[in-house]
Length: 385
Image (cartoon, rainbow, N blue to C red):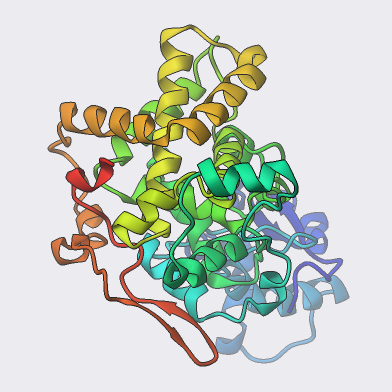
């Protein structure tokens, strides 16, 4: 039975109960609000419901009691639901969906039908007149043709909205939440906890208009790479500072937007051509830009009132000197050793053999784009141009 559509269910302290039952048994209701179902069933008042099959059939005491019994039968199933509906009730028991690695999430997008969103992309900035001639003569090199499909997939993911009915989308969100907060259990898909992570409202999907799911993929890369996770925690802690606070996820989405523009203006084409990759280069650029913003914010005592100026400064730097940003990040990661108390599950998502660059792995398949190895993590030397 659907608790969202039934008038006989209300949510009290996270537990679903029947108002009919509330009216007839006020004396035991406070006790069940903090109990699991297995404990609530031991209450003597509820024995007529949970043990009815063991007693002789008799006429129900009231119509409300009969209805309450019918809904009780479905209550345990309702409580084990993992996800919530925006217009319905929030699932009352948290789940434990497995973490998802960047590679696994990318494989999903490589095989999914994204034709609807691919039609909307503009791979490069359109130039005309003197601007076009100047860019051709003095601008950065163009992206190799064999990397166009990978670039287009990046931009297509940036057009994809969040779908709470898609398991991979939800796993990405839950992984980001758990790795940033240290939580062991899933959180509701809607609620004020997303505001605490730096989204603007109760629904994180409403903030993804400018960056799409690429914004979540960049966050996923940051929290699932064991070398970068400590930096992610540093940035997140600064975002919670009593004076220098800023919306962590919203700032991240702005940085993803900058990376998209840098890619479209072909400012990182040289590095993409050198490494024969687009995803990995853009991931590194995202982290490098966020690190630079973090360093400026912390050392220069910036506050939220400075955010517009700081974002503009890092955007200009990303377009003019991406090489310098890569160098700064590389120095920071080399100077900061990995923590010795990293959770074991981090390493299970990044086996050593996945860190080897595969220059021959990119290829197209009928029915969808598939790039084998395009997102594998690089050794530190590959961050330098």
